[in-house]
Length: 220
Image (cartoon, rainbow, N blue to C red; front, side):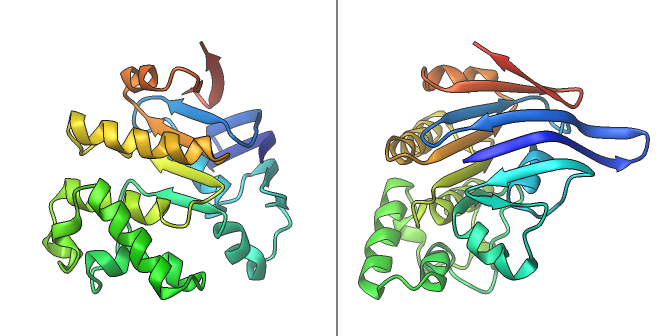
């Protein structure tokens, strides 16, 4: 499903954020990517959905070789990925319902299904009273829940969640993790990036990868 083959990523010649990464993540795995802020977790995600390219090495994602993937094929890759962005990337001109439903609309789902799925996720994430609100009027925690709902809506084969519970209280964090576990139980890969090591205890079967000084170490 996801394979890194001797991947290097640097933003300056003297500083490699990621060095010689070799790893494989198979369908149905739940992975915690842990490490402090600034260590390279977001960069790792950007390489997977090909917002950035590595300086060296190859990355294979869902049958695509990202090194040779033409720009015209990028939408097909990204249809397979749900992303919980740390900086949200919501569309301010749209309301909550429209932000959540947008991906489903682009993928051509029936109107009835879009309404059902959007309302279902909104209820689970305590957003049902905010569906008609513009996202600019929301609190930070509410925006984060909208991003989570949007990422889950099309039940992607790969979910990349970048610090998805950082602005949520304990109760809502548990709800989010339960939603991620439900998606994972259906065979999707979930990669949950966090600096909070305690969250790994909530998914006992999860694989734990720690990013440190450009390298990934497996933890038990």
